[in-house]
Amino acid sequence: MMKTAENTNLASDPVEPSDIKRMIKITFGAALYLVGILGMIGMQNGAFAGFGSGMQAIINIVSSALVLVISLIWFNAISMPSDRDEPVAPSTRKTRRMFVFSTVAGAILMVAFFAFSLSSGFDITQIRVLSNAPIPAILGLGTAAFYAVISLYFGAQWLKNADEHERAAITAGLWGGFGFYSIAAPTWWLLQRAGIVPLQEPMLIYIFALTVFAAVWTYKRGA
Image (tube, rainbow, N blue to C red):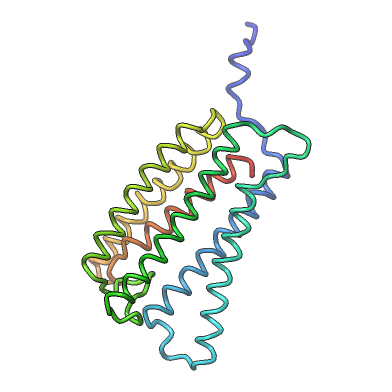
């Protein structure tokens, strides 16, 4: 019986050494990013209170530097790939602009977050981005509404401008992030109820799931 072209395509494509190397680089970068995030969270929540001031300063600087450097490297790889030999597709240009606009929107959100706190007389030392410290009600409502609106808008625009390859990468990333969340959240919850781990932090799970999504999406996108 003759093999058809359709049957021969059922086999998965072989993984090239360059793909493995890229996978390792992306995984290593994501791990360093999470280490930096955990360091920043620990600093803002007093996890290193027993250390000396000098060591706390080092942990704070290293953690912040890891997050900033890895974010810049990733943003550059995603938004500014080398196009010297190939024309840039309109969807690629639109995706790059979406990343720039979303970054600007995030920066505006952070500036507004702190500016309002200062103007309202709220103790700025109690405003910790990566903590559960209280914030003014108006600030919470305003930033939550702004975040929800820009997330829906940029998400819709991203899918609208994405080509077939981009959509496949997004789908793979979503499955990766959802797969992590569907395992991590219930596992943490069960271990918490057994008294083995501390109270579950929803935003920490969210950050990890988002990082998994970004890593898978970056790999499938070919950046």
